[in-house]
Image 1 (cartoon, rainbow, N blue to C red):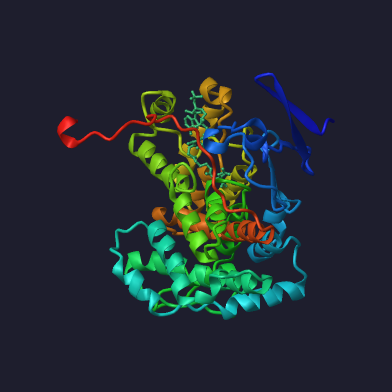
Image 2: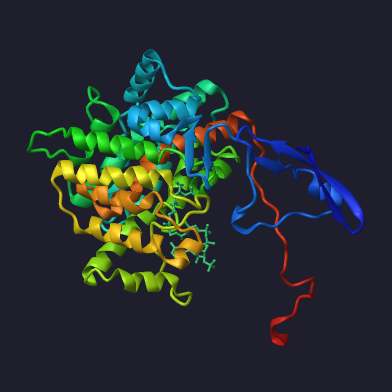
Length: 428
Ligand code: SDX
């Protein structure tokens, strides 16, 4: 295998080093392209062919439908690990020992209070505010209440900021949901597990004893693991580029939450449920929506289908689809939406338009069906995605800072007006 590529421009030959990854992936190193070629850059809208970094965190193979966190398969982690174990693995690179996990969880519990003044920010929002907008601003507001989390150059300072956000974020998630429901904003119970505590904060009622449901705890643990990281997706790239200016961790995460909100990204899980509801209201006419998805003049897309990287089944979608059947069955929930989703999937998987474009169900196609069965409101689905993705964002931000990556600042190809003299208003 050659370790150099050659590029010929105007009769001049330029060599580009080839860098090999650990999974038979190769990259052309173009860091000196512009200086070597007298100004040539590459152009790649959406970065479909451009790597932004080298990373040791997550590997995915879109053709084979492989997803691994630090070398462990998503299938094994989803079955055998806890969300906090996976968070530790993603952030620090190894599965924790019992002692390490206990210390990590204890440090997180110590940080699981949020300054009561943050409630004034929550109260300032109208109840119809979208939870993702509220969550993004509350996450950024944490910087004001935790100024020591901004300038984090040492690993110890980073660790302190990391356990702070892992402790406080579930509280913000619960407050964001409860505010819309007119419920009191409280705190969790540090005697509970991380996921169990989150569910209690989200669903407890002041006048009832909270009933812990093992099925829901296990299902949410699995969903959060499946969402925990996904290499350089839109929101993770946002966290990395904001963090590359040495903005604090919380500010970087706040930006990532905003990027995830978009319906082409994490917002798709909400959009899938709304689409399935529309189809149900339309008498289950899936063919009409398939036709809309294929009509170039119609902006409608089949939400929950397609992926920038997976040109085969999204391995997470396979696991979530199986879990949807189990959870709804165990909870005794009959949801016609699940049947509509399955028939839509079957139709799409045999439709030439989708087959030719390799459009398969992605992580967002079935997840909302489970969230709904858990009693989570539709507009909170992307907030749940953000909670799942939190350890991945943290891990990627920490890797970027520890590797001392340069500030992100892409080039452009200017195609605007060339120089022209100013024209006074009476001559325009
Ligand atoms: C996530 O990157 C990640 O890792 C993201 C994520 C993560 O874990 O972080 O996996 C989470 O964001 C999953 C994706 C959720 N989004 C959706 O489900 C929204 C619907 N999907 C699409 O918008 C689309 O598939 C994307 C955005 C996911 C991917 O878009 P690409 O890679 O830019 O592909 P494209 O838009 O260039 O589409 C290629 C072709 C086009 O048709 P042609 O111009 O070739 O004729 O496929 C068509 C598209 O029109 N197409 C679809 C479609 N998705 C792509 N047509 C109908 N319905 C769709 N869903």
